[in-house]
Image 1 (cartoon, rainbow, N blue to C red):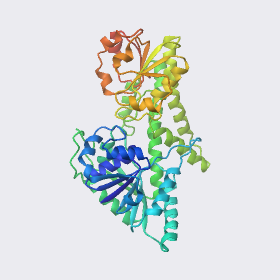
Image 2: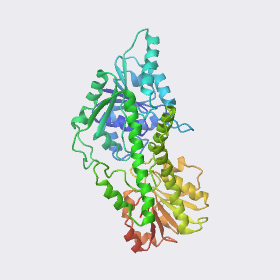
Image 3: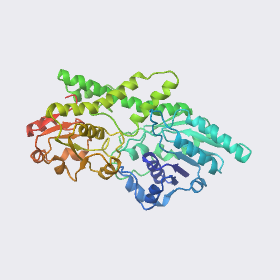
Image 4: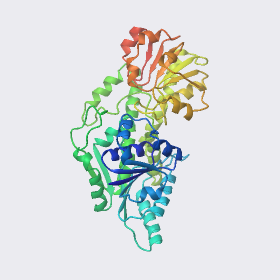
Length: 452
C-alpha cells in the first residue's frame, strides 16, 4: 500500500520504517527541515535497538520530504504521528493536530483516504477532525469528498518499539465505517498472520498468540490509550508506595513484588520499585487525562496521587543521599544513566535529570555518564552545571557517592571491586534495585536501594 506518515519523532519514524519493512511504499513528512535532511543522508533522529538495521534494509521503500503535496499525492493511508505536548497548565495541546488538518484540507485529492491518529490526541480530536475536514473539503470541491478518520493508538515501549509493532498483544481500531476497518486490517495482515521475516535483533518472541483485533468507536479508542498509560503509571506508583512501607518494616520490596505478581490477575510487569517512571508518555498523559476529566466535573484523585508519589520518589532519592553524606555541598556525586529507561536516548521527564537538578541546588558537584545519550544531554540541558564524563571510571573517580538512575545492562558487568577503589566514599544509591545488595556490601559499598 501507499502509506504516508506525518511526523518523524519516536512514533512516526518507527511506524514508517516498520511499515516499509512489511513491503509498503512509505513517505514520511515533517516540518523540521534538519530532521528531513539528516534522514535523507541516512542519519536517524533517535536511538532505538534494531531501527538502524531495518532502516538500511528498506531505504528503497521509504521517502522523506517536507512537501505535503508530494506526501499525499498517492497516499491510501495517512498516519498522523505528531507531538501533542502539554500546555503550561498540563492540558494537552492540539496545535500540531490543527496544523496537520490545515495541510490535509489543502492537499487531499484522492477519494477514500484513511487518516489514522497514532498520536495520543486530546479526546474528541478524531470527531473534530472528521467534521472540520469534511466541512473544508465540501467548500473546496462543492460536494462531499470521501475520507475516513480512524483512531489506532500506539502502545510502543521505547527500547522495544520494533518488537511491539511487529508482535503487539492487541490492535485497537476506533472507526465508524467498515471500509476503513477493512483497509487497516489489510495493512496489518502481515503482523496478524506473522508472515514477515523477524528482524535479526529480535532473538525471542514472547507472545505465541496472535494479536487481538479490538474494534470500537473513535472516542473510545482515544480514551483506551490514555487509560492504558494511566494504569501502567499507577502500577509503578503503587509498588513504590509499598516500597516506602517495606523499608520501614524491614521487608524486601523485590520479594513483595514477585509475590503479588504471581497472581495472574495482577501480573509481574510494571511492579519494579525505584525512582519512578519518566519519558514522554506517562507524565504527559496522566496530566492530560486529569484535565479532560475536570472538563466533565470528574476528579481523578487516584491518578493525581499517582503523579505526586512518582515525582516525590525523585526527591526521596536526594534525601537518602543527604542522610548518608550529611553535608552534600561540595561533594562529588555521579549519575549513572541519564535516559528515563534503558534502550533509548530519550531524556524527557527523566528521573536522573531531576535528581541532578536537586543535587545542584544543594551545591553538590554533579557528574554524569550515559552509554547513548551524552551528546543529546549536552544540547538538551545546556546551562546545567553537569560534568559529562567519558567513562564509568571517570564517573567514580574520587566520587563521594553515585546514583544508579538507569538500569542499562552494561552496568551489571562492571568490575565493582576495582571501581570502588576509585571512590572517595563508597556510597551507591541503586535507584532501580538492579544490583545484588549482598554482593555489593561484601565488596565494601554502602549501598541503598528502594524498599530494601
